[in-house]
Image (cartoon, rainbow, N blue to C red; front, side, top):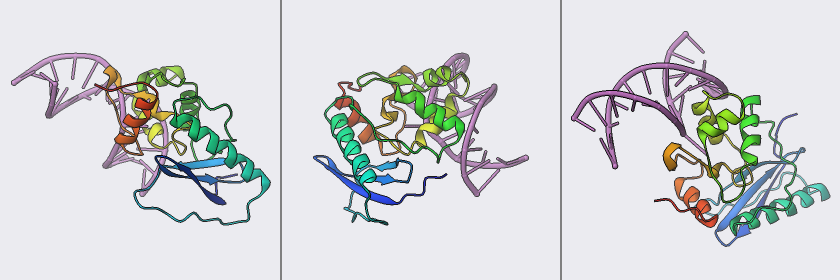
Length: 166
DNA sequence: ATCGTCATATGAA
DNA sequence: TTCATATGACGAT
């Protein structure tokens, strides 16, 4: 029951090519466009299931890149995370487009008000940025915090949603 | 405004 | 058990 990826598929957008990783359970990771183009690989012939998932992923990514909430998400394979991490990721999922929360708010929402720092750790371990909107989590006082894909991406994504940093 | 320090939870080695 | 961390609060500067 783990997230062994069986297919890597590209998502071409006007800001670069994302790479979606699929396991037998669903989408298990999403990479930001690398500086250098990478050749998409495919370990196994694509099943209809995976093509369908990829269609949903592609639509979701494109919606998010123009500031809209995706209509539908593919199944997400979060089996790489611990219980705590999955709890954090699930909680972040509820953050609506255009709004932000703090690490402390997430910590309280999952019933561990003191685990603020651990929430940061879970954000960093989020395998599916964008669809799991960790870019909408800021530090206290409106500070930017960090971002695994690079702070430039975090700024850009927030700007797309109408949130401008001072 | 920035910096150092401390408290604290979690995860990886 | 030890170390690192995408935090936060507080006090000193």
